Image 1 (cartoon, rainbow, N blue to C red):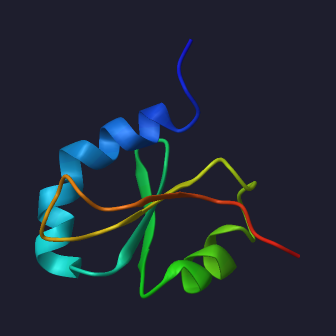
Image 2: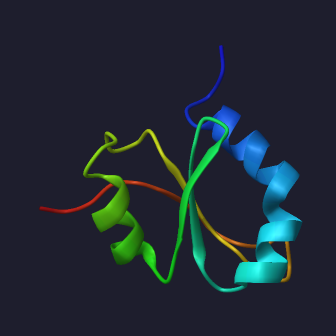
Image 3: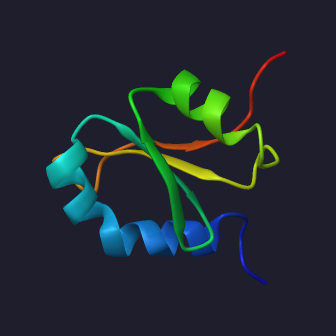
Length: 79
């Protein structure tokens, strides 16, 4: 059984270096094998992404130069 967002994270690993070169410090939102967008911060990403997608179904990952040590955000917002 796959873990939640495992497919998205595996896809992220294949594209992270290229995205980080172009969008360092920004946040990428991924669902399946599709990049939903590149955003300045989590709030901007959440406002754009969760209009059409359920919470917990989108991987949000900060893009950085150190490809191994960047936090992964799983969408959970307070009301």
